[in-house]
Image (cartoon, rainbow, N blue to C red):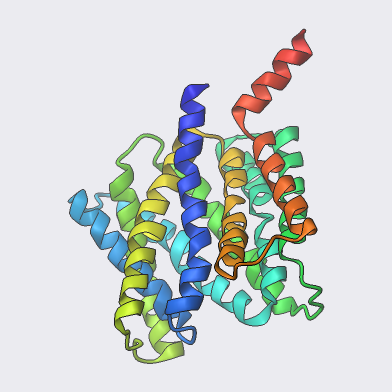
Length: 291
């Protein structure tokens, strides 16, 4: 029980760090080159982890690292870019909040983790909570943007589950570094073709990229994959709902605004949804049923 709580807290580092990237990107990074942003974010993070754990892929891990990096970073970053361009942020965030359900369903055929009722209920509450937090009344919904968001969810969920399946007890730092490097290399030609030359960065942008690459990418993905190794995929997916929660809270604090009632309600729903999927809550419920 204590181990599950510890790994849950470790896993939470990832979505909390990812949630800060919205604010950092809006304040200090060039908005017109998001594909270059993804490559610059992934490659240094992967090289940093490779410097810490100096180990290259061997045998089948050459193609496995390419597959995982393409799914978890390369294709995911590109599709998120498309959805961000075509959808209002409230719609995109709400769609992305369905990722816990996707992870639960995809984990069933790949690693034989059957979806459980409480985590599924938690995922539904989480989606409702995220919608309440970010809803702005926007009505323009581009079908291509929705397709890009759903594709990003499906692709990254498959990548996360394959990471859990292929590296159940192996070298976590090395596998994470290989994925980040592969994902960055996949993004480079796309960025060159779509956005041209890499952007010129001023000192604040360099510092922002350093934070995103080291904390919100290298550290965050190690924490995320650690959670996938020790916890059920559905549990990890629900913890991921802390991402939009962090983004909303940080944005509100930065603007010195008070949360609206619907946002407070949404936050409460998300937190309840996350708790429903945790092993401790499930065990407590089973214990009461046995009594």
